[in-house]
Amino acid sequence: MKLKVDDTIYIADVDFRTAIECNRIANDNTIGDFERVLGILITMFGKEVADRPEHWEKLLKWAKNYLSCGKEVIDDTDKDMDYIEDMDYIEASFMSDYGIDLKETKMEWQKFYNLMNGLSNSELGNCCVLNRIRNLRNFDVSQIKDKKERDKILKAKKQVELKSNKKENNLTAEQEESMRRLNEIIFGKE
Image (cartoon, rainbow, N blue to C red; front, side, top):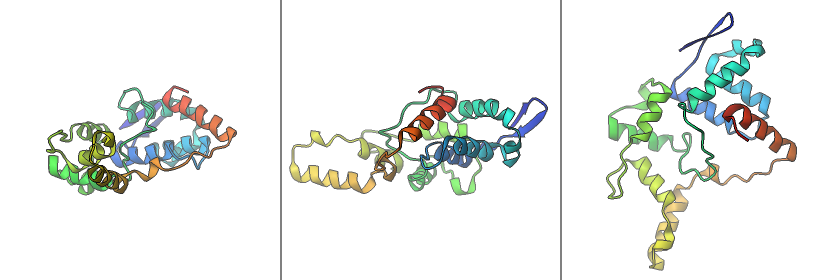
């Protein structure tokens, strides 16, 4: 996809793998705000963007809108899915629901996102593997009265829990402020 900023034409890499990498960079609290912003811009537009800081704000605004599919970004502190950790489940689900081999397919992020939201999901169990895992992660075990059954479900939940949800937030005040500023820039909120 081509974007023109002033006198420069940028080619945005809009493949879903690029969007997932940008998401990983945006959520990486081991790097600073500057590195994150530059990482996202370079990932989407190529290393030439590093030489044009006067374009960064416009490109970042476009990237934010594109990556969020024009929707408001919701805080995902209790997320039930991670694009990187769950990629095997995602690939299996795309294959079972759509017959699409993601390893062999180039696909624009927004199409991928829409197909992700359309994956089969049913309370009756007729759903793709990704949504079975997500349903298990979200299942309220307090509904189960039988201790043996509850322990079985808790064990299953532990087996599929996201590693990214286990990370502790041990950021300094300065890092917290940097995160807040980056979120404001990227997501337009504090």
